[in-house]
Length: 420
Image (cartoon, rainbow, N blue to C red):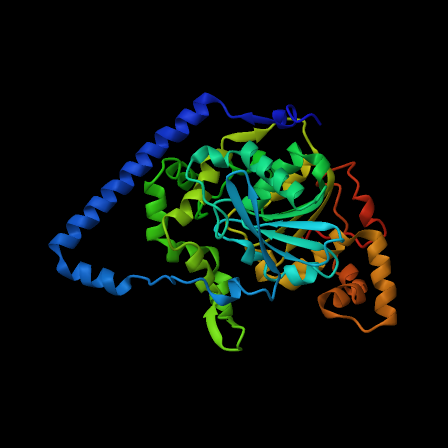
């Protein structure tokens, strides 16, 4: 596809729709300003309010936890593209096919902590910090985060690491980028996995009202400065809403000397502790919600659409209906999982992901090796217990989409399931 024409599949929504968004944005920001004014007056009148606020104030870590910088999960590397430096964690043999992991919002490369080691047994794994997040550069200007600019940065990044084509696994914001990149740069995408995220054409107008990032929130964040300050002010509450499973785990990770240093939530608190840490992430939403894929455009690469049945961020029907934009697809719904099945139900998620990415040839090779040698880790359990998996799966019904076939790589592999 010619470089000048590949982004013609993108189109901007009508000016009338854009006007409505900014009108509601002005009203929402005015309400927040009035709320702040009321709080200031309240603090001046009632001194006890100041004392209560100082007690409730959250202390965010000023140093990055060791488990986010050490090399146990992979090698920390950087690539500089023109004026933007991108950080990523790399694992596995570089001669293997590459899998690119794109995290969501609010998250960073560390969101793939349960996938990196498993995937690295078979793939060259790249867990990228998206531009504006964590250790990647955070440009100030909004239009540095436009869909075309982000896709071009991603294309240049893949060229810089000598990856002619990759399989993309994206969650939330990372999946939105993955959908658009697969549409605009199809020659660089071998397979695509969308985790808990509808196609962009189905996402922005179908957000649940009870979602913390609903339509009103999208309209509020369109103006600069004030939304960043509000997000930073409520950072701990937002992070707890997004990661309730981490609070339940109460999991600690040891440092290099074996001592217990920090729980997982500390990593997220550090990553989103400053106002600037929110500016880049919000700039994605100040651009992406105004773009759609032209009607009739579909992805030709094999696609896996996977989501939790208890997701409150996006509607399940929107995620399932995203298959309309895929020629070859598989749908998997993970029971008892919310918006982050790759973290909440990592074992089941990894088994599904590996079967989709590995394909028939490597699957047969793995089956042969598993009979000759003892199984190793999750990969061995996945292929050793394939009969049990088959018993819990059903073929994707014709009631979803007639006439579609599964990817060639999945022939003779038990069909993934759509649970009733």
